[in-house]
Amino acid sequence: CKPCSRCRVKLKRTNSSQTMKIGELAVATATQIETIRFYEREGLIPTPGRSTGNYRVYEASHVQRLIFIRRCRGLDMALDEIRTLLRFTDGPGADCGEVNQVLDDHIGHVAARIKELRALETELRNLRSRCQSTSPGKACAILKELNHPQAGQLAPLPASEVHTHVGAVHRRKAGTHA
Image (cartoon, rainbow, N blue to C red; front, side, top):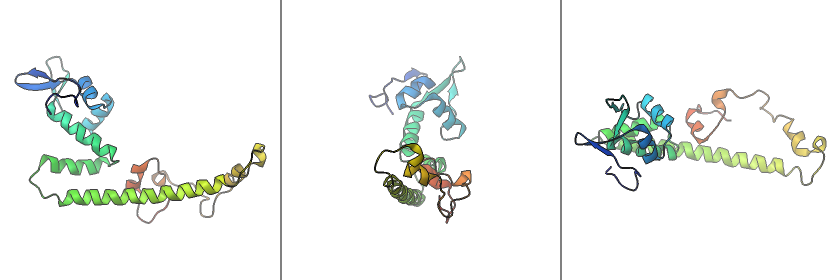
């Protein structure tokens, strides 16, 4: 990427290449510094060079890669999905059939999560419909209902089954329900 309004900072020229420090990369891509370091540890961003003062030195290619990663995360893709897509970005001559498969699988995960969220919405609306007026807490129909587990829900779910955000669908085993 050439220095532009999208990057919001100018890259410094050193030895005929454009570079920036991690804080400048963070500003340029609207990404927290710790997130950049995390992506480095995960191998999604190549390890940057170091300046004579031992600062990380990022190049335009880091900006573009981080923009790509952020766009994928914005689409709620898992890190493994992003890794697969980056392999094809790094080897653009390869057939993109696997890229299509990654997206098709991700669409399936999103559709499954939407179905789960719709069921959750229905359950919450049903729960909310139990109380149409204000009353003391001990008489509240919603609180009474919440104190009684549903059939099949007596045991707490294992942590691997609990959904914390849309991406949790990727970790769920086939045939299980939260």
